Image 1: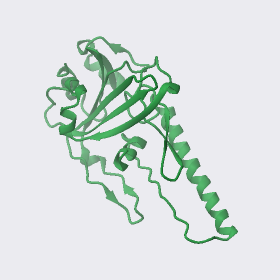
Image 2 (image 1 turned 120 degrees about the vertical axis):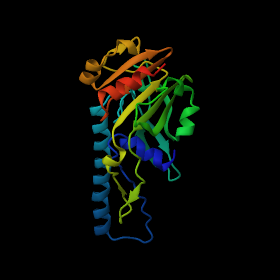
Image 3 (image 1 turned 60 degrees about the horizontal axis):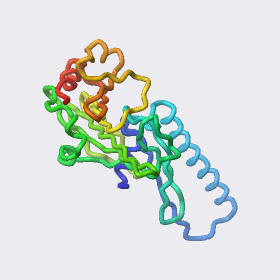
Length: 245
């Protein structure tokens, strides 16, 4: 998994970034220094755990993005023998996290998105002023070999700001004003676990319904589509929704 993908997992919508650091010990430290390090380590672990728990409690799927269905914690070992846990698995409500073998999220360029098999269910034409912002695909493999995928695309009116770094090496949260208006489309090859109604087609979805819920699901062939208004005008999102096949 690329570093950019890991940052995206931890808070893709809110652009909150959690940055880890590796410390190499070059000399023996006295007991006071070790005590201080132990306290700091506890705080870091507690903070990271709280972040993951908060994400899990605020949205279905454990990460702050719509349309992910359910998620599971996947352990990935590294060269130091340590384990990092991340929650990016997507699967229908009929599955269980105990059945997840592996999961990943990969950032996509616009060109990569256009050739993805699920892209056929994206809007064929975008509302005036909107264009491709950023996208990612969530891939989950179950222990029996079944694969579930979700393509998630943000359409925007502005530009994705270039990532900037602070003096301490931390990443600076981009100014949302640069991105402009945004709406999100999620395409899934599975039925998402959600409390929202899932409509049989987009013709059943009206402007007032979209405005009341802020996002809708409907079926298109063997796939399920989630459309979320974010900060875009309802008329623009409804127009894009009508252009989905």
